[in-house]
Length: 253
View 1 (spheres, rainbow, N blue to C red):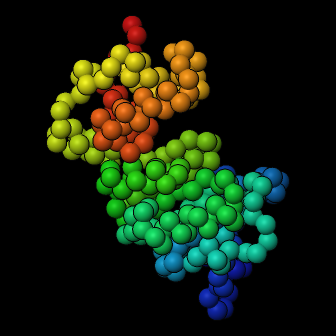
View 2 (cartoon, rainbow, N blue to C red):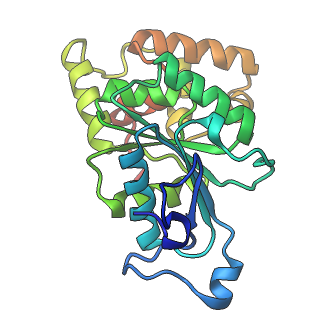
View 3 (cartoon, rainbow, N blue to C red):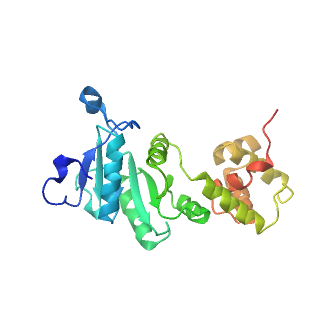
């Protein structure tokens, strides 16, 4: 599955490097000057050799140019400095484990120590809403189910690399419906006027500092309101709060 110049003869060592660059869903990579200009690079951590090589091979069919480094563990990464923007995305295949599993938490910690603030995307066998929400709470910037198509995975990576966050919509929708069915339907009466004002701005994607300025309150007071809102919703983070209260506010006509 790996590029022929890396895999002739015996199986590759701990790190396998394959050409990668701008995605081309027609299956052809870049060449010449385009390839030389490519700077996009990915680290893949996957302790299953078969799935690791398959992932590298699949990405290699739609990327050309830069590089992907595939390793069984973070400890197997090349020793040279990979910080300061050298790596754009880190893919971590958790297989059947949750983000809270000690092995995954450890890998996340090691990745951040080695790669700095690089965006981490989790690949996982299961995509139930509670697992996705939990992963977001661990700072994951993308959650790709193992059942996703190659096209979806590539688009998710592009979104994350551009500064966004990718999560499977169906997972959160099902999770929201399940949580709502086990509790009181949201109609806004559960929240004070100030909490509603904070909620509305969370829906708009505004940071705590901006919310504090607009509502003439301190940033610490905003945090208290958000904490109380989360308790009422039994939510674990702002993303879940925004998703579960999305129907409380209608767009202005």
